[in-house]
Length: 138
Length: 310
Image 1 (cartoon, rainbow over the protein chains, first blue to last red):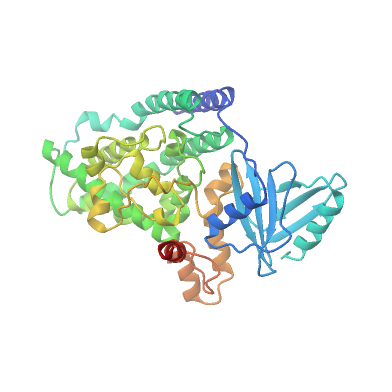
Image 2 (cartoon, rainbow over the protein chains, first blue to last red; image 1 turned 180 degrees about the vertical axis):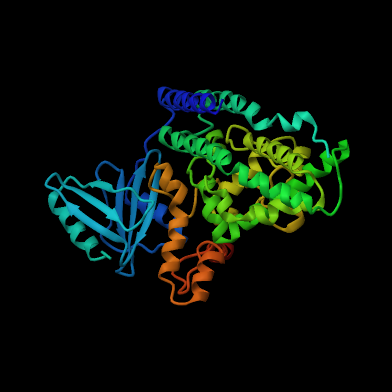
């Protein structure tokens, strides 16, 4: 009996997810501009003070915005139709690596944050961010 | 005491599951037609997997809970039995206990580690209702809150039955497809509008509307917040998950507690990491719901002052 329920449940879940995809219900999250990124960082933490040098990736899927304190960096990454935000400080970063395609691969010391790929489209920009974020490694 | 046969052989949740499925399909079609509800396939898949895991966990832990419940019932204070009025009182009292259990689930990190799973979606649709934890018995709430009515004299089968009805009621309120119910209903009952507030991360809405079925508990105990048109709900948790992995969804806050306690500098600090409200930290580097609300109110006042001067 339990096996039948289990198989039925898996079939039901699969059907619901497939219909979800088929209906095209999800719109991918995109940042409009840097102000949009700063506004989202501010909304989440109530009073995020952005400093100079913030950048969004050309695809609008992610952004890095240094805080005015010169230490922390606000990170936004699109996950599906929403953004996930992290305020990176000393010890937050496990590894930041730039590749030759201009993307930054970012791993955090955060159990619930899957590795992110921020595509800056410029190897120099990606390298600059990797250097900066590796300064927050712990 | 003779337990009525329909209680022994019938769990309303099993009957409700096909109806839940039909309702999810209907909400998706409604979302497609009107845009008044939001879905994301991977988020829905994660929520549904959490629901399946919760059911499996219920089967695995069920025997332990049943043995404990019968042990408590043997030491009951009153013999309440199965009279018709006992069902009504059990349903209302169970909802009262649910309110407090739910309130503790938001204000004690140990219990939040379990309940955070249900809040971890940034979407608010019927699949979110099914996003349930797998490790509920680890909170040990069944030893006290879960046993209170049984110790009083309500049969465990009756409590299990009305508890299932309570959970079934709560399914339909996880939707953006319904704006407001009739005014009398909004006054007494928990509704989609009231529960949207509960799932929102807007500082004004954090830790509000704990009710299961009757919203009157929140009004009685000062935790009610109506949904405001000018404050649109943003769903999820203060630090949203960056993963759809069900194992990580299930374990992330438990892992966070263990990691914090491991690095605690004293026994007191370790205890507070477990028992203080979520967001507590010894050096104030994190933010609790109350602190977020204070920051938000301070900013609102600062913004209002220049406006009033103009």
